[in-house]
Length: 563
Ligand code: 9MR
Image (cartoon, rainbow, N blue to C red):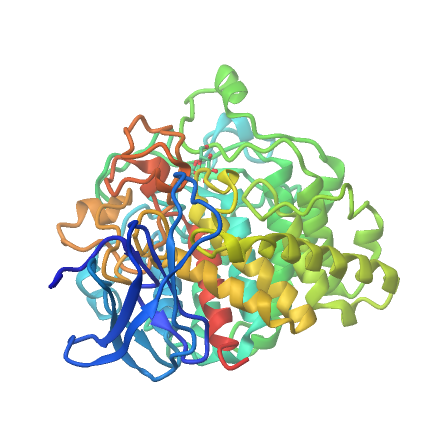
């Protein structure tokens, strides 16, 4: 009976730590019991255990059935069988079950490298030639100054492609690089052992930091040495077609400076400065250059506190018109908080924080490219001891806010259909929703680090289960990891390279009912609004600011697996 895999059984398609909670969600009605078998289906290890109906309905209005086999801890490879329905995809119960995920989601940044070929030795079947050298980038008229008039050529090579497109945007690079540097700051021992097989693997710095440096070196070139301001982005006038890097040779421009880009830059370079200081022998002078660049950017922003990047307005004044990703943000309160936090921690001098109100309101907005306030809060929380000039009450307030946020996330989850923080609210499903799941996980990890309260860790892990298959579409949303994974991400190299499988380790944007790309989705239920087709850039693109938080979450859970 029922020899088939059932798409109605939703679980983490990689698997579980032996001592961790283990859930599967069944979306079919009229089911009552489940069994657990070895993955070759030859041996039954649990027979006819009861499923429990969820208390609440999912966003589609249906209740689910829950298999909670957390008590089962024996390492091995298994499938779940729901009596009368079918089998789950196979999964493992083992230590370090997310080690491969941690590596792949960081290695994905290597595959996004600009201005370099990816040789087979490091890129395997996805090896490719170089593209976008970016050593002759033009100053766009919107960015012209007396020392750098329009058409001035600058060298701004390296960096990572932002997403499925081939441009480089400082705002989005900022949150991404900050999140990746925080992996190192929070879990240095785990990171030091991670071998990514990249060209720099033989040097004395951790591979994660080598990879980050590829982007930091680009970021440094985006600062005008004359005044410290930072160009908003380096871009074609319009998006390249769905071709390999290097096929198109359209001119590349550095466009208008802006306050968001400059402050994000200040924050990242301040953080990079304290991280790379430990590797001064490997990278002489780097930490110092980062610090000086950060300070110059901060000073520019003091003089230019309100310069928005408004692409539509820019296009009414300058040629060529620029139609690539805007990342336009008009509120800089959060960027000031982030930059001030990083500079204060790096210098040990609280003056930057004292210049502003770091609690402008009561909200704790989940990090996104347009709201980076929490990146500053996390940095302060992890570095309290470096800031003795700041009153202790201030830290008490900060920690309470992080803990209250975590409590609000986990409230009510035990009754929910998928038993995950992600998806409790329809508002979780905007463009790049999968990064919300990962960022909620990071927030819970911060609360765990402050309190040691294990429920936070457990729900951070549940959000990883969400991303790897325990969700309303049944996809494991990371390419190449799991049984049912995106095959057609909106990612130019993966579309154009002639290799069947997309590059591995990339988190797709995920469910988003907006249909901003005009692609009709199979469902309008927010949690189900996803299509694995490359045209659906509003649900199936990949992006560096989405990969960074899943990389953080997978490293964190690996590093904390025995707690
Ligand atoms: O992630 C961005 C999302 O928050 C915005 O709603 C969307 C539309 O402006 O743009 C997304 O960012 C895209 C960027 O503009 C260009 N590169 C690809 C990014 C991911 O789709």
